[in-house]
Length: 131
Image (cartoon, rainbow, N blue to C red; front, side, top):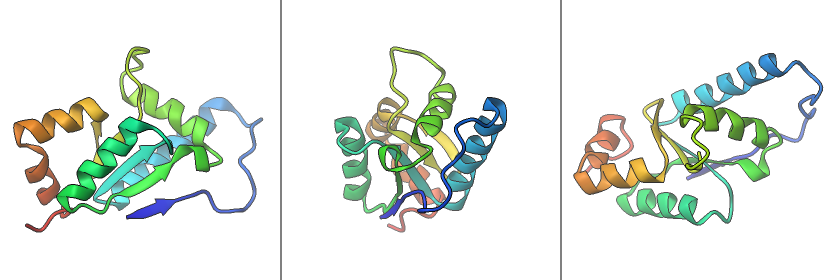
């Protein structure tokens, strides 16, 4: 498991142009997703995020975890993930799971893939599982 946090450097300027900022946040998400077999965007203390992490740990996967409440750009990342998840106010965008650089979805999608037997082959295809 790898826990990523924003480095203690210059904080992102809140006043910069919104479209430019969201584009850079999107690129940051894409960079995390492309650079790791499995990435989970979470909030510490979220029970659904905990369930997804425990499921993947139980399968033998060591995902990269980005906890948004420990990241200086957490709100902006959350907003981009909300749009990636379809923008439906009835569904929370977290946890947001990326496998093989592609957005898989949240807890419902991950659990459905696990139940129907497609999660393990997907994880094997991206090199997150070897068994």
